[in-house]
Length: 188
Image (cartoon, rainbow, N blue to C red; front, side, top):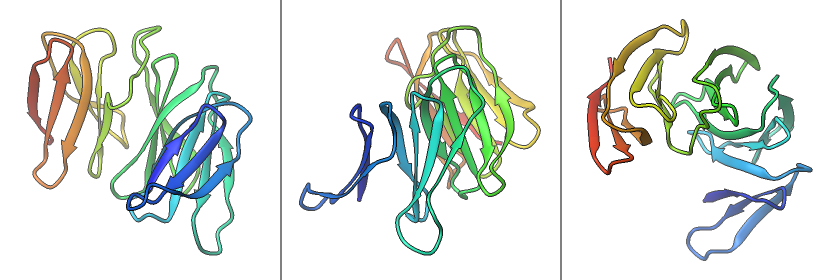
């Protein structure tokens, strides 16, 4: 299965074998900016430009729920931690907001320079306790602890970070930079 987010305010679950839509959810009024499956394939988390995120359960007794992140800005992207405990949102103002999924409580914010928009792939979870993110339009990578928010490590780069990918099994990451170089780093 694959999930997509649409400007038409829909979330669609696709069958990757035949390319056909399996389910279509119209749960928002404004455009949906991102949608991802949880690590176990039980639910979808989606975000919208209205500042809401929605958890949609695919099967089972749990009901769908909608929550609001106290934000003045549009939610842009979401990621789910590998253990399924945390949701990490980015907004249009460049903030990263960490939410404890089970308790639906905001754990912390990682604030970046004003007006530095977070782009897709520019932040990631490093299982199970770290958030890794680029530093917006400036250079560098920050590794922070989920629970405390403390910066564990800052890695200087020659140009802005466009994408980050983490291999949790080997505790390494790679960042793709604007100048088409790659930076490899270790996760604590």
